[in-house]
Length: 328
Length: 155
Ligand SMILES: NC(=O)c1ccc[n+]([C@@H]2O[C@H](COP(=O)([O-])OP(=O)(O)OC[C@H]3O[C@@H](n4cnc5c(N)ncnc54)[C@H](OP(=O)(O)O)[C@@H]3O)[C@@H](O)[C@H]2O)c1
Image (cartoon, rainbow over all chains, first blue to last red; front, side):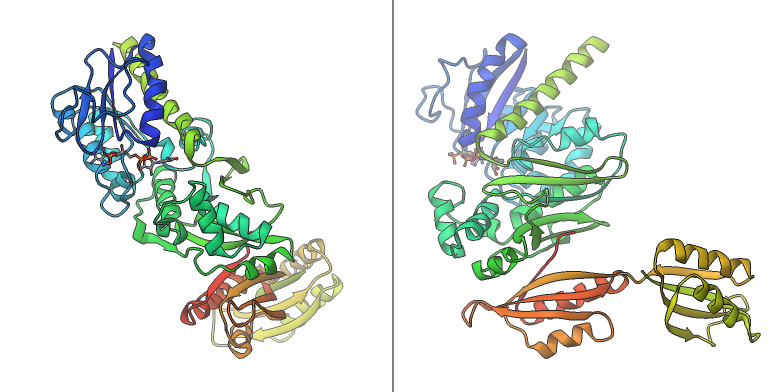
């Protein structure tokens, strides 16, 4: 039985947990549920009917640092769904690092650890012979890393461009179609739950820049940090400027790009018929490949759809474990 | 199509004439000739010619003809012009913008919009593919210095 723990029992954590209870028959037991206050442990694994809505009020709740579940050897696979801090990487970084050090496979949706310590963590995973999967960190459910690693491995990625932040794309779309000023479009996004109460990381392009860093390090074998990205957000974009673009069959989009080793995020003029020109909270990512040419993926970059990426990572780890068992 | 050809001429008179003849024979129209006497590369005097050819086939034939007559072609580069648009959010003077294009590219239109509260300028310009990057970088620098945002076209 593979024992799986979830740290971060919020939006994604709760939804993932309910999917994972169905994996028992496949040899995966969900044994740990943790949040910032402590954790709940079930040696045999939670079932759909034993899955708590709230872990703190549960009788078995242990109010201590969840990192100890790694030291105590209670998990074989840790799913890290903690809030993102792109400057310190914490609290996710400690969980990811400690898990890898202890030979525990890791799946994370938290970008923080990867933005801060990509090389350290991937080499640690390599030297410990465990997996570190992070499909959910960029483009929500869109399969970017698995596609690149499996289906594109015979080709060479020359450049990557993308609309990597759903919040700003929603805002810019509303400005484009309705002529709304930025602040109204932002309020609307907040009301719809698409934007954080503090939307500055999105608006200033930092969230997109973090994703650009992860893409560059993971797919182009670069060793970049957030400081290496030239970032300009959308705070100064006006609906009049978007109208001026619209008159020429274009619009303004926040585009993250990696080209010739240079990383940038900036508002760009994009033709309305350009494959990257997606609207609403959609994300789009375009690879330029040596043989295939341009390849564009479009999909929902956040919300429930993110579970598709998390489950794909978990399936991959299960398959790896299955394969190594067979090899022994 | 506009091409810059750099030829290696010996200091003997007549060599340039021979090259010009091959270009003319293939429909090429000379825009400018730059002699660079100081820059001796392997005993040659490099001469740069900007030429407008009717097509790439004409250019290729001219190039082959020049080489056959014993004149080495040291380099060729396309001076194709492309028309591009940028929107600069914020305000800048016409002078400042014109300076950026001095000697490299041409402003086709400048449109000011957004009123005084949220001003922007839409600039349409033509530039050679060779100068494009430099022009965009200069525009970006200008925008940054004046607290504006340059929104350039995604290829
Ligand atoms: N939601 C999406 O659509 C989406 C998509 C892609 C990626 N992501 C990323 O996935 C992560 C989780 O997102 P979410 O929407 O599920 O967030 P969320 O609803 O805010 O949940 C975060 C969870 O992490 C817990 N937590 C906070 N500090 C912790 C600590 N020190 N140790 C253990 N747990 C801690 C919180 O517990 P408390 O309640 O006790 O504070 C909460 O249960 C974030 O990094 C996010 O950026 C989210």
